[in-house]
Image (cartoon, rainbow, N blue to C red; front, side):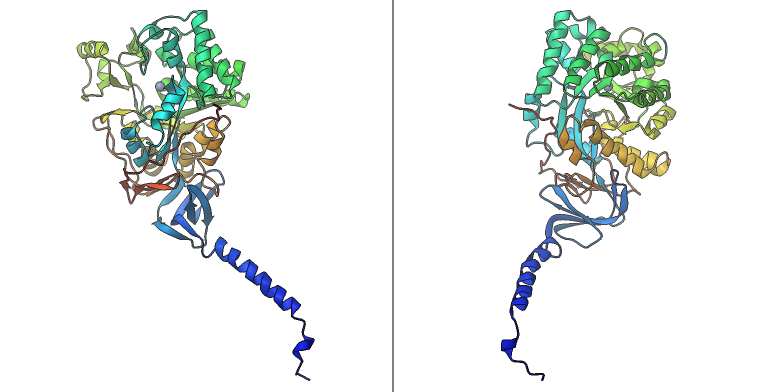
Amino acid sequence: MNQTSPRHLSLKPIILCLLLIALAAPSFSLSTAKETYDIVIVNGRVIDPESGLDAVRNVGVSAGTIKAITSDSLNGRTVVDAKGLIVSPGFIDLHQHGQDEENYRYKVMDGVTTALELEVGTGDVDLWYALHEGKAIINYGVSVGHLAARMAAMKDPVEFLPTHEAARRAATDDEISEMKAFLERGLRRGAVAVGFGIQYVPQASHWEILEMFRVAAQFGASCHVHLRNAGLKEPASSTQALEEVIAAAAITGAPLHVVHVQSSGGKNTAKLLQMISEARSRNVDVTTECYPYIAGMTDIKSAIFNEGWQEVFGINYGDLQWAATGERLTKESFERYRKQGGMVAVFSMTEEVVETAVKNPLTMIASDGILENGKGHPRTAGTYTRILGKYVRERGALTLGDALRKMTLMPAQRLERRVPSMKNKGRLRVGSDADVVVFDPQTVIDKSTYDEPAKYAEGMKYVLVNGVLVVKNGQLQTDVHPGRAVRAPYSN
Ligand SMILES: [Zn+2]
């Protein structure tokens, strides 16, 4: 009874089953157990401001992209042990003037994986990108600048900030038309945004600014504006200056981004933030940013130090510090350096103002950084770690999650309408660019000071840019240049 002739068995289903197992097995092993990623970051506390993920996970990275975020174990050719460390999207700085190897090194040690020059910008978008291609540790990008457009229209020499005609006089109608064409050319070449430093060109009319916003609106480009005034008194108050550009955004439809709200706002900062919040509630597209320092920095030759600056800012000579030597100024040295030109730190804010700005849910974090031969403002090398160390850990002024949102997701979202590739930055999810920072929340801190601005921040243990380790075990890697252009779509 038990013996069955093989002839009575149909082999077909068995063969079919074996075939199915054989077909299924390789793909099963490929997609999980045997996949080897370029880099895996294991056992870190992974924080993603977009999804709200905040949990211990393993992250798999291959070919510059996040491929896996999982509780399962992962294999990698390189394994980064992130136990006890935070794993976050790399920081995006919307306001970084210094765009060279020296600056990028300090940025990356501060956790910045994308540094964009959007306030002053450039006049020649193609040349700017060509100069950085293949040479940058981190991602880079630029706006086309109204200052550059104005200097070109007035036949001034090319300067970082205008000190000739463009700084001194009103534009003719023809010059305004030339500026519009200049901005349009830059935007057609993929400029990320349009930059403004209205305080540096005080004779620019309200109509001139409106005309520039109209061009930006046509391209869906955000206008990154250093406000016309920083003063507390009417007229020429920062309140009035903010009204000017909120009105321009409402009239033209161009998105507005107010740079360093705390340095333009000073003791008015809370009022400016209230105005921005109210404008947003009326569907005006306006955002803002701040940096965590009580001093600003700018060129002593610029129009900011025109007659009456003491009253405007409520400060005096002794509140200025010459960047090259660290000396505080007097009337005599101010006048000497004003003729010469150069960077000067301006101690015009209070800790209270800075904390108000840092805590406000509307502000992104942006550095306004620039170092030249190791001289400059400590914000270049310390803005982000200072937020994490001083404002999150030491003072508890804001949560780690809120701080990271201000450094990652918010700046990415600001630009993604015009630059769709920004949808893959500022997030840690499968498919996003592998710009990742791994830092120690217990030790992360800035080390740069006004006297010694070129000191690397501490606490960034690993930093990835497009899947390449640029900081390894706290050590900067100087032989890799994985940074890519952040640029709006353009056609040749
Ligand atoms: Zn500025």
